[in-house]
Length: 140
Image (cartoon, rainbow, N blue to C red; front, side, top):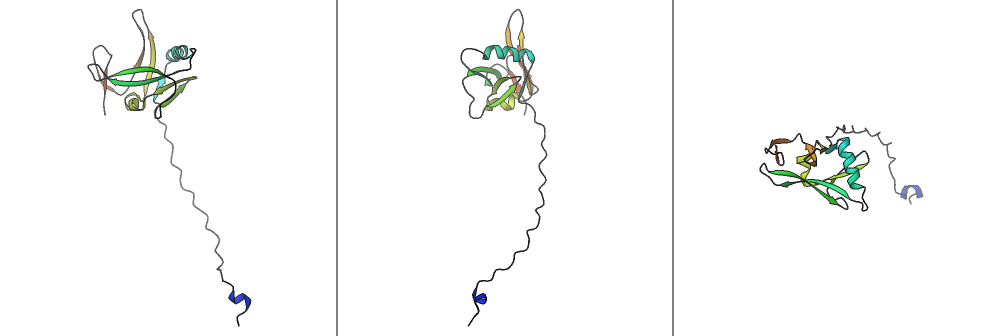
């Protein structure tokens, strides 16, 4: 006859868990801003966006002009699913996800002269532009 202790299932004592070695964390690299805005552009955008109906401005590009692409700005009520949101000094601007590659690193400015008033972009990605400056080509 077996003793009560002998019939009981035996479990081996587990050794204490070895301390986990911490994985090195990936280093965060500064990312290039999708778009930055001059104080003049921020002021103008604030005036445009503080209307009676809350809206946002989406910046995109379209295939247009003699050099290939031109900037396109439109009012929207809410961000698209893949839009990049850029906020600076309390002003939010959306970047169309399809235009992000062409726009990344650009500076948006507002120019007001006797003949025209418009947003202009200083874009480091431009490889070629048409003579009038309305359209451009980016390099890969």
